[in-house]
Length: 368
Ligand SMILES: Cc1cc2nc3c(=O)[nH]c(=O)nc-3n(C[C@H](O)[C@H](O)[C@H](O)COP(=O)(O)OP(=O)(O)OC[C@H]3O[C@@H](n4cnc5c(N)ncnc54)[C@H](O)[C@@H]3O)c2cc1C
Image (cartoon, rainbow, N blue to C red; front, side):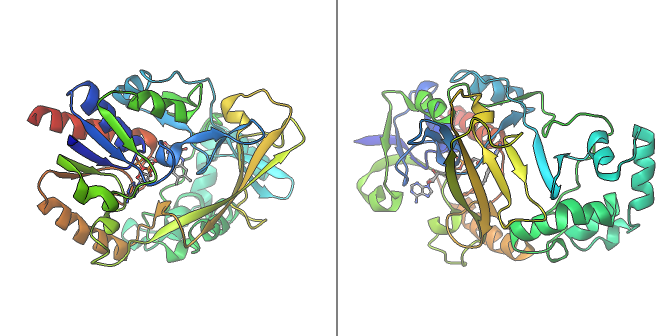
């Protein structure tokens, strides 16, 4: 069978492109996925206890991009979940992150107005000239000072990246968001929520089309020579595409330990971070996301490690140099397009993955 497009990877980027090309451009698409399911990194499923869980870590949809919001609403509605993250900064002290008036009052025992909080940071922050900021520690202490750095950032960074902030480039830990009000939400984007029937259902609805053929549990390299197609869209790791000729791009990976407990709820929020004690980085309790009624609950302990499936690209100057070499090779290829978090080697949120895919679609559609 001849296809107009071979798309590698059935995550958000791959499924968005498959859907658009089939529905809007009437193209025949072969979607090849090495895992045994569609949906890539943000899929979810019911576990053996009947509780809906996200198998690759907590995913909360949020966006400022109206076209992305409208596009996804063709395939799902979203529930009213609003993400709030607790940080267990000390034994017995859980506070909302990002920093806001309420959090600062809990930590310091003082009351704050927006003006007095600003004055507090002004007094605490370490004065470092922009040009002298050498690492991620400098970024944070020059914004909020040493105490908050120690409480929220230092040990969390070590758990998450295996490195302390002074070992990380300035761009790895961006500026800490600070709110001079009592808004305890994690995201302030106008559109946010969790798909009412879960993420997997979105993907099912997207790829249900006679022009889309799906091959699961298949590495594209095993079939590419047997398939006839005009164009290739690649959403897998860019270094794998080029057989690692310039070396491997480094990633942090996550390990998840799921447990179902005989209680209705385990914790106050969907996600509780553990910056300073315990060896896990956070605990997620999925029922909060889906507003699911169930007498039991599933939680997930999350650990960060250096080896395994690619999760977070490690943005260092060394990895940037390697990536640029692959990118230059990719640019020389005809009728081959690289899109998504692995192909572009950058952390992107779900809305950015959809947005990049829609942009690529418009380009391809205008060519056809
Ligand atoms: C722990 C974690 C939490 C996150 N939380 C959020 C969040 O709360 N909100 C948010 O907006 N974003 C979140 N994200 C980001 C989100 O996961 C990504 O934006 C999204 O998954 C990107 O989609 P993608 O299609 O680019 O990549 P993927 O979903 O990874 O899809 C790529 C697909 O390609 C397949 N593939 C790779 N190689 C091959 C091959 N050789 N042959 C065939 N198939 C192949 C893979 O199996 C995969 O299914 C989070 C990311 C992580 C790591």
